[in-house]
Image (cartoon, rainbow, N blue to C red):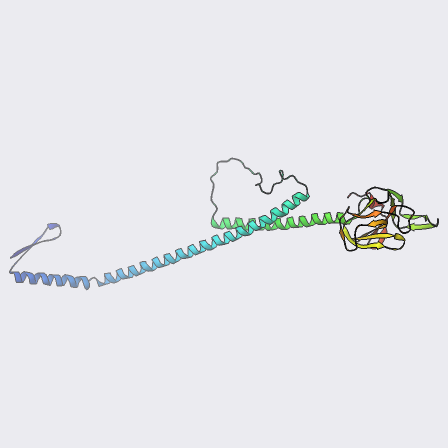
Length: 303
């Protein structure tokens, strides 16, 4: 039996001749040698391959963990951004409410000052490349906007408080005639008493008119007295706060009671001539921090 073996590239020929038993024995020996060479000789390379594979697996696990961390960080960042945006939306709603309230108080036209529309803005048309915000830049912008909103909200609240205080200070300060219609019949100061003819100090002013004429509150406040009181006849006394108190005497009829809250210009009584009086009129007094003052400057002040 003859077997011809070709080497790699067919450059060399190996001829093996012999019986079948010898050839089989030869191939078995060669196979054993090859198998031993596979399992024994390259063991260092196999160990290196295993180490390389282990390192690759560890790197893959680390990369996956890093990816999970990045994903979690991105999710947390988005959650924080959503929370900040929600807070700013709530602030914006409060600002809109305060702004609309102030706009109505200032009697601004809704067409000129509409909180439901964006303000008109613009810019030059220049050919410049636009750049997107980075995550950190966007968070910085949100932080700055949040701070500006908080500042504007405080400013609007202070403005609303200041406006309310100004309005309240105007309403608690007596202003205007305390009657719908009438004329000044007696001034503040010394005069001849109409009943005795002697010199006597008059602590208020008298405003004469037709019996039943409406008597008005000179300022907003709390009714602290509504009833008969000596020579005043039917008297109404109102405490306006800020040190102001007004009195309305000689009324024919009272339309408010002690403890009532009244606004500036409300009808509180009907003109009469009760008590120490010679005819239908209102005796009007103004007290400032407990001291009676001349009401004349308040009579002609604008409401």
